[in-house]
Length: 395
Image (cartoon, rainbow, N blue to C red):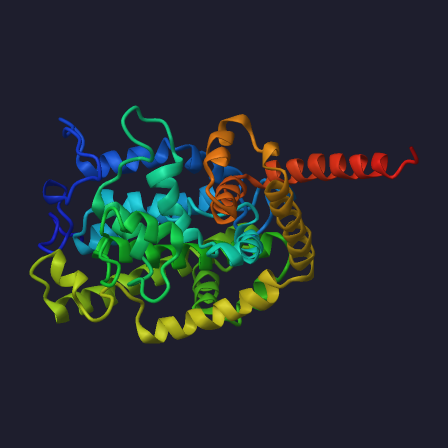
């Protein structure tokens, strides 16, 4: 049963904790709706269309990209938030923005850039999302970034739980100006966005892996949850075959995961009995979770995807190629920052030291789309090779 109104522990836009730069309120949109709209109109959000989820974009236009993944996460998140009486607009804003900080080539690109950035404070895509929405998006007259509400920024920073230990520089830099209370849990809306991310990628990676021919329907029918869903479809539609059978089965897998999160989260919320959103932040554990049995099943599904998809020979071959692209581009821009576009040159000149330059270069590379990075690599490496060849000629 869907609640008729938001619960007492839902985030209330009328009581939002403000923005770094004060603004007048909108007459027809809540603070969280404005956050969502600003995210959708952000340049970084559009670039997700051409960034890898698992398969590099040019490998086929069927597969999920970071943009379609983010839209699927937002759809799942809104469903769960509505069922739990949470604020759907805040949940959607966090879900849509959660992957803004991803590099080209997905986690492979992030690993390569983190390796290059290790001497300069490292690189983390979650922290980079904060850097994007608070600094790198530059469209407004009065501030850099999107000037999002504290609640949305908190959700981006902490949707995976409290941030403790060594805080990534991109997050620490902003947190020093606008305290996001990193040591506590985020509100329930951000926790929903995190679980919606898990639900979306576990489901659509099965679908994309099947389409790519990395495994078969028969093979995933041995997996928990998935096998039961295929059998339910076969019982209801014994003549159904091919892509329709697959779709009917996997949409049921989706439903099983969503229902489990709603049921388990309702149980945890009833146990905690929070009087407001602050009680959720101060709790000693997350309130939005999978049940123990389903989480165990998901680990088995995840292990299957890891061995049969993320480490499939064709995927590993592409991983090697794109890792080389990042490893080539980073030192090239560090040695020749004049290769950066003109609108990036002002900050290059202001870079106080090598670390500042490296972070500037990382901002530029992480913002690239897959195809832009590949084209930049092809053009710049070819030019470097040509220049080297010319310098080898006798005088």
